Image 1 (cartoon, rainbow, N blue to C red):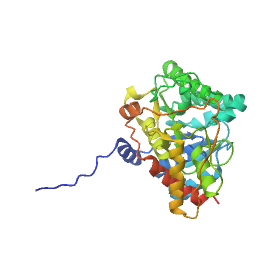
Image 2 (spheres, rainbow, N blue to C red; image 1 turned 45 degrees about the vertical axis):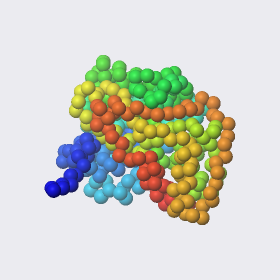
Image 3 (cartoon, rainbow, N blue to C red; image 1 turned 120 degrees about the vertical axis):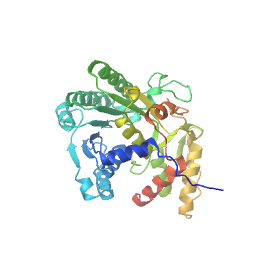
Image 4 (tube, rainbow, N blue to C red; image 1 turned 90 degrees about the horizontal axis):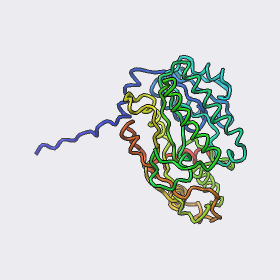
Amino acid sequence: MDVRHHKPAASPYDKLRGRLKSAPRTWLITGVAGFIGSHLLETLLKLDQRVRGLDDFSSGKAQNLEAVQTLVTPSQWGRFHLCKGDVANLELCREACAGVEIVLHHAALVSVPLSLEKPLLCHSSNVTGYLNMLLAARDAGSKRFVYASSSAVYGDDATLPKVEDKVGRPLSPYAATKAMNEVYADVFARLYGLPSIGLRYFNVFGPRQDPAGGYAAVIPKWIAALLKREPIFINGDGETTRDFCFVEDVVQANLLAGTVADVQALNQIYNIALGKQTTLNQLFQLLRDILRQKTPSLPDQKPVYLDFRPDDVRHSLADITKAARLLGYAPAYEFQQGLELAMEWYERNIA
C-alpha cells in the first residue's frame, strides 16, 4: 500500500510571509515601542521589511525596542528608523508617513480606567491623534491604513458571540474613542478613497506586556503576582469570561490586513481573537498550575474574591468568521500554548 506523508497546506499567512521576504515594502508602526507595536516591528524586520516607527514613549518602553534589536540581525535593524513624538502633532505625523505604503496605527491611550479619569487626554491621543494619522496617510498617498480598534466598541450589547455589525452603546470614554475611529475611517474611505481596515482586538496577551501599574492587563498582572508570591484578586465570582488572543495572532491579522488584495476585504472592521471563552477562574488555575510545574516551591494559593466592578463586561466571545473569510486569518496559538510562551518571558524578566 502506498502511504504518503503530506505536509499541511501553507496558510495564507505563511504564503504572505514568503511574498514579503521577496518583495519588501515600507511600513509605519505608530506606538512602535508598545507591547503590540514592538511585536509588529520584530516580525516585519525579520521579514526584511523597511519600517519606520513613531512613539512618544508615554507608555511605550525603550526596553521593548532594545529587545527587538537583540532578536534581529544588524542588517535587519538597519532597516528601522524611529521618529520620537506624539500623534497629536500633525506635522510629525506627516513626516512619519512620507513615503510609507502601509500604516499600522497603534498609538493610543489603551486604559479604560485611565480614560474614565482623564477623558480629555484619551480624546487627544485616540481621536485627535488618530485623525492626524488619517490626514497624514491620505496626503502621503499611503496604500493602506490599518488601525487598532477594540472589543470595547460592543459596549452594553450582551449578544454572544460578538459579530461586527451589531454593537451597543460605549461604556467608557476609551470605547467611545474607538467607535469614533471606526466612523472616521469609513468617512475617509468614502470621501478621500483611503483604504482602511479596523481590527477589533479582544484580550491580547503575550511577552513584553507590562505587568506594572493600576491599569495592567489581567494576565501579566497575575503572572507577576504569582511569581512574587503575592495574592491574586478576582472581581466578582470568577465566572466572568474573556476571549484571550496571543499577540502573534494579532501580528498575523495586521500583516494580512495590510496586504490583502481583495477589494471586498477593504474598508471593513474585523474581530481579532481566538474565538473561545475562558473564565477568570480557569485562567487563574492555568497560570498557577503552569508556574508550579516549573517552580514547585511556589505556594498552591487560592484567589481572593472582591465585589464586581461597575460596568465590567460580564462575558466576551468573538465571532472570527469574517476575518477568516476575507483576510485568511487563522489563529495559530491555542490559549495554553500562548500562556506558556508568555510565561517564559515573565520568568526571565520579573525578579
